[in-house]
Image (cartoon, rainbow, N blue to C red; front, side, top):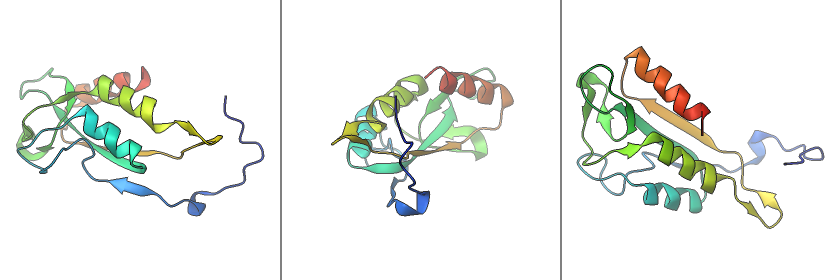
Length: 131
């Protein structure tokens, strides 16, 4: 339980470190994404992270995954993909660590949706709500 009753801090009081394509280990295209890199980014103090969400395959009914890709054509151009549930578990575990009596918050997550098919959005919402 977090007790913030005596905290009158506002958002402008924070310095917010950010990370672009937070799961990428190197190049933005044609390289790998990893849970370890996501952990490293959060451990390094990033409080704004970006996760690109793509559909796993081109056919309808495919599930959302974390990768790098292009919305146009629905192409995935990373060399692997990450399970969304596993990545959100990493965020949940690493982002809200109590250090020296206080939490390192707030955390902003930008989900860059590289797909337009509505059922994938519903599946993504379910995965987020169960994490």
